[in-house]
Length: 542
Image (tube, rainbow, N blue to C red; front, side, top):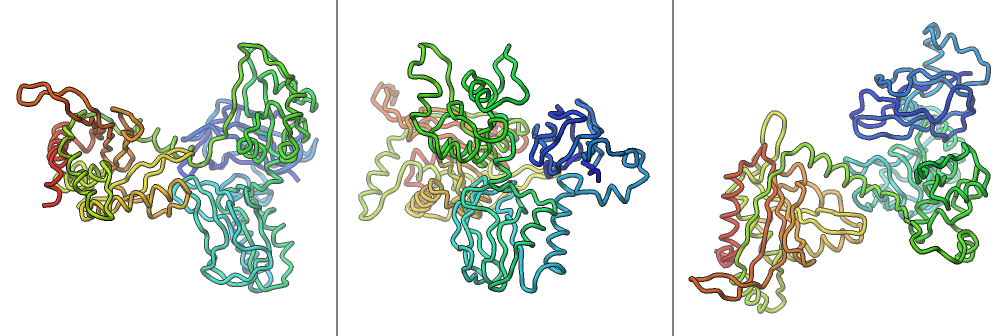
């Protein structure tokens, strides 16, 4: 029976999509997991894969055309099957019953299927647990560690697994009690939100059919098997070179070595990245020569030598590809949105740090006390923001929100990018309390252990690269904040004091402001207040 594919909803705000390119044509054989088309949404151009097998019988939207979500995109069925009823609209009931037709409808089907299973088809007491949405931007998650194994008793509130999101690795607790009967994802596997994660129920219950039915209901479960079946284009062909649509294993290896297309499963790419293996040097044993998990596991340096030879000519072009992590993609999305929606402007100042240096030495002479210059800056900002609520504000289309509380985000560099834990009510915290909080959050950030509530709610952000020897720089505003302060290094240099050139210590700062909420004069007045606190830090203790 033919199956109708509609324009999918590929993002939470998507209302229509444009077919950028078709990767299959009418008459082509389609396997589950094949990429049908590239679809441009309001946020990105995304690959749309098939969840069905058969022959592509009809294309409803041509390349370059735009259509609303749920518009007929394609029809897949048996070769030679009559699909006239689907095209003239006379069998709407058949269309609605054919398959989940878009990702939204698949989700509905998945929801209905799981609901039906949980209420009607499931054995008594069995609960299906799906991949949770652990952050506002999370679209998929990776199981970092299972803390329970099949057969273990689970109590409500027990930690089932640690799940890596686009922001952090977070503990996921069970809201049910029972026995862990089935695990839908292995450690290291990724899946979309709402995919099958686990099944909990009475001990001894057979849930093999439940797991099978859940997957069949349209869940976007992206397990290792699906990963190995999905073809992913990793590099683009070198200009002027043509490649066969389907190549043997040896042809795939040759193409890889010449800078052409490399087909590899997402899991294989991730494993290669972790092991430092260049995919172009791996022989693929999967369908059409694509690289799968076992190829990475079996790869050895000797195989590399056999693949590319022992001698590399001088000047040969080479590169490594690193797949974007969920965190890196979220950072790119959020910063691009901020840069291109908020009209940034920058105010640069240079502060005299002589008194701050002496203040810190004296403060740290107290037993068991250690504060940093960054702690001084955070505290000074918090006090200055109380006097300038416009800088401590947020922009909405119909209003500005002037925050009376001060929650300062402190940017922390981590291997995958940047995290911004939040020191809440910073104006009410002492310098040692701020220092302890920042050190604790920085450690959690680097270990991916920050809780979601520890990264939310900032009203202002401080980014300090002075510790890396950077004298001055500009930053992109961390929305929904209205401003971010970039803090440079303390530099020893000649300065003029009382008409004399003497050796001094100064620090450059740059305040990036959203012009919708912070006028230039407002930003300048804030910096004047900040200058008073930093150049005379004892006033922060009064």
